[in-house]
Length: 468
Ligand code: NAD
Image 1 (cartoon, protein in one colour):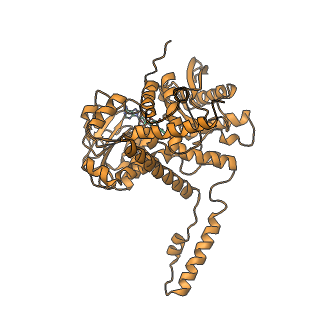
Image 2 (tube, helix red, strand yellow; image 1 turned 180 degrees about the vertical axis):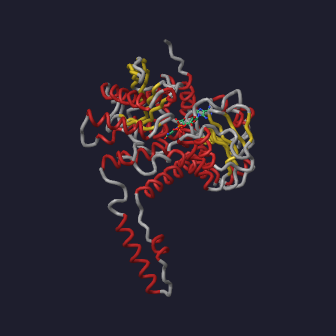
Image 3 (cartoon, protein in one colour; image 1 turned 45 degrees about the vertical axis):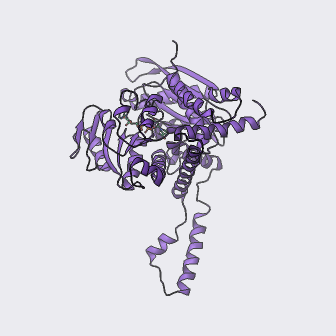
């Protein structure tokens, strides 16, 4: 069967556009773009009713300029070689933008998860992991998967358990990230991608000049937003946006889309969906026609957090949002990107905006290799030091701190606080880095992010003399 490399070609198109602003050798640029290793696996699944089904999956390691290679595992019917290659390439560029020292990778299994029982999903996951082990496509120093669309902590725990049983080595826990905390995971990983999306959008909204150009006030408070996909990334992005004072006015899920200009209570909506199995009919909201209509609804910020190619030639002309926050990978086709850009929209690109997940995965991997929880050594020492300072302040002034004030002011940093601080630092610094390149070259943020990664990865290749 011939493969149509449409999505991968789209990523390469953006790469080529950015490469014009760099001075690297053509051959080196070609090496940077290609996928180093592409693995296609097929294996049998014995279903609960005893029937046999053939399951198909992929793992792609796009770049080995740094090791391990890193990237999520997706369970969806969209999974194919083209999609996995495109997503693996995006991982290389994304890691470079946020200075996470990994090459890019991606994996996927072509299944509709809702059609399988939990034990069937477990057998699929464990067998897929076995295939990755046998072909050397997983390991704490070579290739480290993570969650993506359709997968989460449970699948990561099965992957780690399968790997560790077959490789009972010291650092085996570091073979996968996004694990439950009890299995070597890290506090803050589950929400990291959505939280990073929030940090990135908030930083963009601080830019007075950009906001004036869009006819918006600075800051995130009071801005209206629409989210497509209430999964891990979409839910957490919406949660932190809402907590910061932005107003959720529209939501799309598989069953359709809803809108309410007065605002939607996210937590109540999630409860409602759990109970009724749909978002339709939720408290005071208006049902729109089909699941795509809400993408064209009135709002300041549109956050696509589902799959690729959602903003395309067929709807880009009707999209009213002034800011597009690409939480999903590849949600905007190159044609739609041009249409939206022409209209003056600010597109915060996927290869920067959803990098919070891999950033905290990097922290989890470091935790696994060091075998110690962040904050374990210093937290109590910090608290004691702060208390001593506060006691001195009490002694030289009339001020006596209440127990509550003392507890708050003398708090040492635990794992969650350190992870959150590292994530905020990464997302904010990286935004400003790509924004500088955007101004310097008079390009959009996507091209600026690509220039940033091409420069970083290219310099690594150059410093090796030529290819290893
Ligand atoms: P998820 O499976 O947790 O959630 C995706 C949600 O989107 C689901 O609730 C699904 O029902 C919904 N959905 C699918 N198609 C839709 C459509 N056409 N309209 C409306 N809703 C739709 O997946 P996720 O982990 O949140 O990933 C979402 C996107 O974010 C993907 O593009 C993924 O590659 C990207 N991403 C995820 C992570 C991560 O840490 N999980 C990291 C970086 C990027």
